[in-house]
Length: 132
Image (cartoon, rainbow, N blue to C red; front, side, top):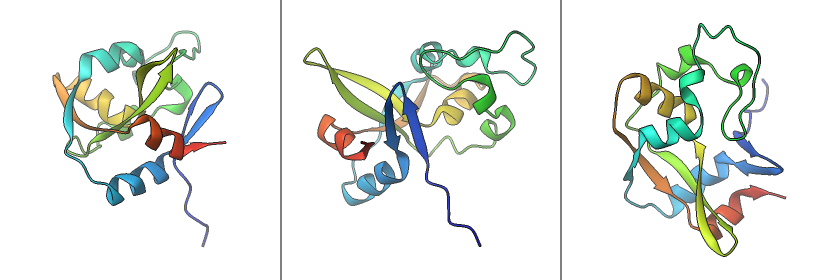
């Protein structure tokens, strides 16, 4: 029997451990707040992640590339499970990054949902789940 695969999210040179983020949220629960689907879908170019996409291979600056995305899987995801948003600091200001839930966000976009539940990590929590 093989060991379970660790869920990771890569953003540039940073690698976020999603399993650690989920464990942290279990240890320190919080109420999920609604996050806008259209904003994240546009930011991550989710409209281009379609099963029938036949254009040139591409990899957006933010979000998954076509080869790492499974639209069929996305349509089976649980939209009641909160997505996870990390908080980073750039130039002394907070910036958010969707690190878990791209498939759920895609499904919500295709179904015309306005929002999804989200749990947002603080900058300190985000630092704890970032791989060095």
